[in-house]
Length: 420
Image (tube, rainbow, N blue to C red; front, top):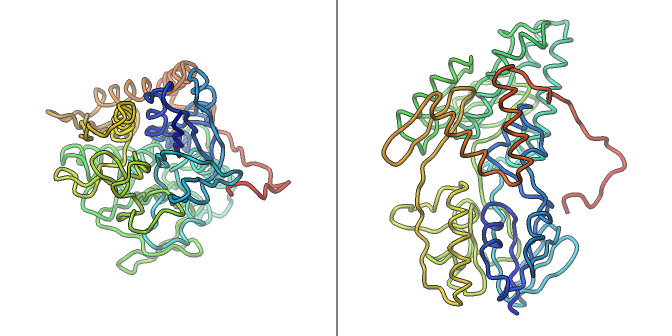
């Protein structure tokens, strides 16, 4: 039986595993986390609207219904395409075919020091950490006696005007407008400074002008200051230096400005495209090989419609996983991948969202309701669907959440193998 190793249990990898013929293949799924998570809702974890467990589902629970499928926890340390082996933190796994679906990571565009001093929402762990720090700033701000220090503590800068940046900025704006007056009476909402910066001239660059304009309007309604054509140059000692040389103090910087392919050590340099993605052909094969493939965010498939590769979103990943499974099941690569664009969405808060469909653009309550329905149906596990729905209903009518908990983990004992 042919052995297929799949790196990554996200949208692409998990859909590939689901559709592969289990009578033909022995499948080993590698992921550093033992769960599948739902990235479009990371910002709700960061803003205390949802708990981490609400948007995660154990991989073993998902694959137990399939025969000849096993899960292996580990961080990929090396890929040897000659020996056909993948080495992780804990073991070396041989393969007949390798599928890389490792997803993407934050892109700091060469300024890697930002990785250690800014907060992110690219993983569920980052989102939970960001939540803890946001709550920490609010609690400390409520206690601060010095007005100037209080304003410093309550300054939040979101870098990046894509969907993730717009959504977390909108969530912070809702906290400023609805939550702080009720739960933090010692804080004047006007003392909370929330700013979103975007390097280009519009928000949601991949969406239509109408949707971009509506997103900008919604953020302003939530008291978020939006600065377009503004680039962050450096961030040191809480001082942000912008590209124009201006310096400002920001206590908390949340980075959503870009993504790159998850590093895959061992692959030949010629395999990689711009942004750390892996070059693939129309069948998702790496460098024309039949035994190594890449799908999802990490794959860069250049075409006339997508000269820079497909957008790094859920739908291309899901569709690539399904298409590759069909080709592998047939035993030959006959069906080229063609992306069917189902549209783009972003939410800015309650009753505020934008959606670009094939023939029209939606905004306001209709777009927000459609966004909720699609994301709810996309979650794994009925329990997660019910829990998320109940949280959303509660938050809608109460403008509050019982999840505003500061859950900073204990430091000791140190886990020396953590993240290896």
